[in-house]
Length: 344
Ligand SMILES: Nc1ncnc2c1ncn2[C@@H]1O[C@H](COP(=O)(O)OP(=O)(O)OP(=O)(O)O)[C@@H](O)[C@H]1O
Image (cartoon, rainbow, N blue to C red):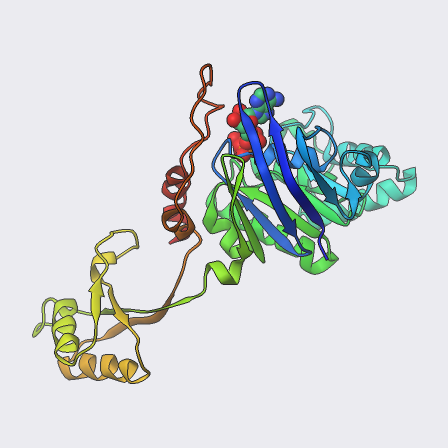
C-alpha cells in the first residue's frame, strides 16, 4: 500500500526544471524527503496537495489523483508550510480554530480539536497569547498544530526544524515521531539535514536537482558494515595506545585502518578493524588487555545516510542563463557539509 505515488513526475519553470521524471512510492509511516536547497522538495509538496499542476507525469495521494482531486486530498492531508505564515496579532487558539473551521469542522468540534492539538504540541499554557510574541519553536508548533487539527490521514511537513536550536530540533523531531506512533498519521517530512531524518524516519527519499537519487528504508541506509570501531586509552608504558594496539593486532594478522578523515569526533584515536570472523573480537580484547590499555569503545560501525552522496555519482543540471543563485540547485556536497556535524 502506498500513501503517495508519483510516476515520471516533472515540473518545469521557465528557467528551471524543479522536478525531473520523479518516480517514487511512499508507504505508511514516517518518511523523510531530503535534498539540498532547491532540490525540488517544496515543489513536490505543492503538486501533491493539488496546489500546483505538474508539467508531465502523474501523482496520487491516498489513492486520489492530484490533478483532479485536489480538494478531496486537502481534506485528508495536513500541510505545514516552510515559510512564516502566522498572523502576529491573533492567538494560537484563534488561528488553529480558524484553520479547523476552514477544514470543515463545526464550531464546537473545531474548538475541542484545537485545545487537544495545542496540548499535544506542548502549547496549552500559551494558547491565548498573540503569536507575534512567540519564539521560533512555538511558531513551528502552531504550524504543526494547524496541520493536525482536522485529524488528517497524512501530513506533509516542509522543513519543520528550520530555525530551531539543537534542543528545539530534537523536541520537534520527537513530536513528529509521536504524530505517527500516537495517532497513526503518516508523515512526509522534508529536511536538508540528513542526520535528522536518520533518527526520525522509517524510510528516506533523497532527491537532487529534481531527480530521485535513492529511496530506501532507514535500516538499509544505516546497515551494519563489516568494520569494528575501536578506541583505547594511553598509558605511561604506551603513551600512544592507539599505535601500540594497531601494531599488536597487525602482528596477529588482523586488518586495521586508522580513520584519517577527521570526520568523526576523536577520529585520530579510532581504529577500524575488519571483522572476518568472530575471533577478531577476542583478538582485540586480548591485545588491549596484554598491553594494559583501557578499552573505551568497541562498536560495530553503521553506514550513515550522508554516505549516499559520496557513493553515488551525481548528475548535475547545468546552470541555465539567467539562473539566480536561489534557482541553481546546489551540489550534494553542500548537504554533506551541513550534515556532517549533525550526522556523526
Ligand atoms: N514559482 C517558481 N518559479 C520559478 N522557479 C521556481 C518556482 N518555485 C520553485 N522554483 C525553483 O525550482 C527549484 C526547486 O525549488 P523548491 O522550492 O522546490 O526546492 P526545495 O528543495 O524545497 O528547496 P528550499 O528548501 O530551498 O525551498 C529551485 O531552483 C527554485 O528556484
